[in-house]
Length: 511
Image 1 (cartoon, rainbow, N blue to C red):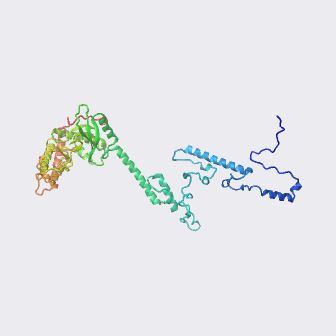
Image 2 (cartoon, rainbow, N blue to C red; image 1 turned 30 degrees about the vertical axis):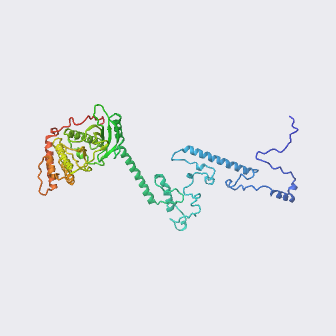
């Protein structure tokens, strides 16, 4: 190849354009004053390079000349440090992920994060207010507290302002539901006393909420049921016993009553409209429940106060047996369809999804009210003498008016006259009935003492002053004698047994 056309020239530098080399000169020329003056004039034309002692971050190196190796090295080092910091950020984010506990690589970064102004809010200290538009124009005054003399300008962690701001920042850790402000224009400071009070209150509320949630999940609340009860109700619908459950129609201290449409189930005759009486699985609202069932000889061997769920099932079974006795004696009362654990399926007293009104709410004429009194008197006599039962909670709240008759409901607490407190319960029923009908203007209504003797068939003397305390004292003495007599006879000689009392009832394996 012919290289005659190649023009020799100075070698190219990879660092940029290179100034032409100065012509060589002798030592005498160098020492001459004329050459020194010429070099000084030529130096005024060169660009002024940045001071190598300055921080490379504070100098805009993009506009400087790159003819100096030092300047170029600093530019490359700065670019390398930024890339290294970016890689650290990615590794830090990848390593921490969504974890609440994070590890920071802040100490390994090359560039100060506060100078780049690219750091997140979490990397900036909560006391830093340089970028706060509401505080930028306010001077920072160092509080003078805690020290005197030479150290009067020293601020420690116990300072009131510093500690107050720190308490405010710590509120987000344990009480996110407490609003402490968004930080813009609000310099909220919580004292230690207020902070500790709020912390204790929040922890107490969290524990109370957890207890209520646990109680709601494991017990039947008002107008609601627990998961076990919902499962039983669902099985009744899926088996065809019920067409659907329409909703709650009544609530009480011991149970919740739901209206449902009856279906067909094996050989059972299910009415068109029924009610589900769901006994509450908590004893908080009816704590003296065991008083009515503990001394009942029918359940004395199965009573267990330590197992509330079994007590509730016995309570439902007891109402089933009591209603069956009353139906055999032709007392107007709901008919038992099925008993499943603590759910009792009964016939509906009402029409077209409208329950029959209570006797306290219905407005009757004087003749109908007088007839209602005699109906109640007759039913109390039949219950006591034929069914061997005392209602124990008889009042205008547990009597319904339907089709021109009085119907009795809620007999789960009913006991037999041989119960240690049976006569006391009967006297209380007589007091409620007599008081109600006398207030309604029924002149034929008997007094509480006459009504008690008429129903029970006893002849307890009534003094001229009709002292209720003396009357009750005689009743208690009579109950004591009857209890001793019953203990001598034994429970096997009771006149009424539990055989053939109630519809099909199949206890589960866990019963």
